[in-house]
Image (cartoon, rainbow, N blue to C red):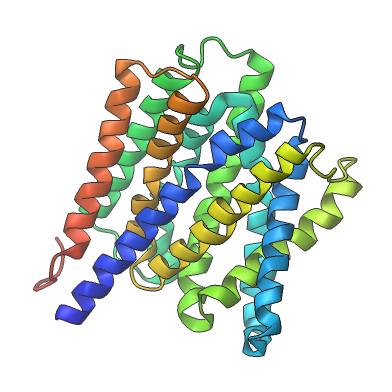
Length: 310
């Protein structure tokens, strides 16, 4: 009983740490926009560089490239396509709805994961799991109403807002799908191999789709932009994904998605201190709900399971 409980605790903490690192995405992307980086280019270059780093690692660990056809299809093509969608959509979400807005829209994903994990992965859909997913989703939503430049969404022009909302929703769908694929594939193939398949597949998809749609991925225009991009790769691509995969290796997809919802807390706090964005009492309430939901999920999933959940 002790070992499974320790594994659950480790899994939840891995997912929590991943969410904290993902929280750097918004502020760093905002800095990249200020340096003149293109929205569509940021997603491509960060996963390309991440892929190259893992390929260097694979040169010394050749077993990394041993993968069956099913893994290539599901993790490489399926996961890679979702990564490509996420990378572009989330950047549009940040540009259109702000850091807090994009994070709030993104974290409708835990509800999708909790609902879809039952038919697709056979996970239990308990009242507690669904309730916590709804709580953190509502908390993230309150964050956007109280944290976008101090005026919720009222000061955002409508075309920009629609772009941001569409980007955030697409990112949420991609994130939910990626979480489900990771929960299936990581226990079978390992964290590093799945990470290579997904971001490598995402790089190929974006490398083909972006030029065909008239948006060839331009490299960052300044040395400062390259520095921000390098930090983004280290934190949000390699570090966060590896930690999240270590989490879903140990716990179900639904609690992992709830734990990673700490991202909007980190992202909004970084936006407060680094970007001068404001947070109203409603925003603070939202952040409190997210932290409370994440904490409740940890306490519930880390306790020994002597009887089935009701």
